[in-house]
Amino acid sequence: MVEGHAPRASDRPTPDDRQARTPIERVTVVRRSASGGRRLLPRGQAAAALALVMMCGFSASSQTPAEPVAVQPSFRVAVMGELDPEFGRRVSRYHELRVNLEARLPPQVVTEDARQIRAGELALARLIRIARTDAHEGDIFTAASGAQLRQGLLLVMTPQTWAAIMDDNPGTFSHRINGNYPRAKTLSTMPYSILAQLPELPEGIEYRFLGRDLILHDTHANVILDRLRYAIRCDGCDS
Image 1: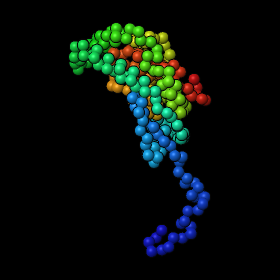
Image 2: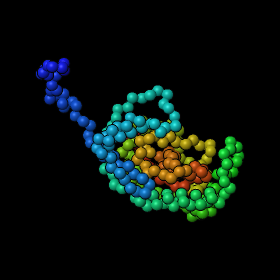
Image 3: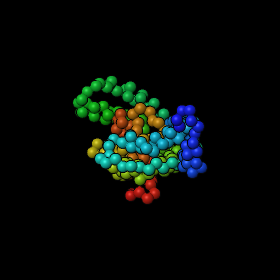
Image 4: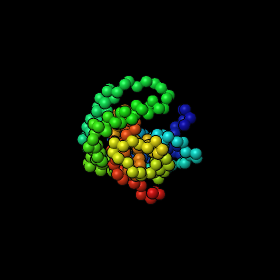
């Protein structure tokens, strides 16, 4: 509009224009912590945050796609309850145990000697196995938290996210709880949209996928702590 002139009829938005500019649906984003708490973002920030997650789902990937793929954002409304707080308590108890066991070992030194690094990992892994002699599948992932995590991951799963996870996925392989993660196996990519649905973990503990299963991996000792079977699925994706 030119200063000093009244707006023309053609400058005013028509009903069709107003309909075309309808805002995206309102979405409530819930941020979880390992302790089971949650924080709600304001609606405006929630919509922006969800849009950023959907457009930047591969920002946490360890690889950059050779050819960027244009992805049409898919907005979904997720009504999620609080995660079973027992999961957070079990993770915290394990982390405290690991810290106490590390304190019994010689202090780590900064080194590029792979053999020395490996020796430290093995020493810590031995202490962990002694302390968790009776560890078995389901020690950390409770039945309730497992069901909630599967539901949350399904809500953000897209063919593009599925493809990113499966790109470096080592697939399922035989392993023991408390066993070492094989060094010959790759580590799966963890897209940001997936990590945003999972509770935060203490330092040195990570989520990884083995095929469709989700594991907890202690990176200090290179030990597999627990496994949630069939954690992800994608309707219409290549399995």
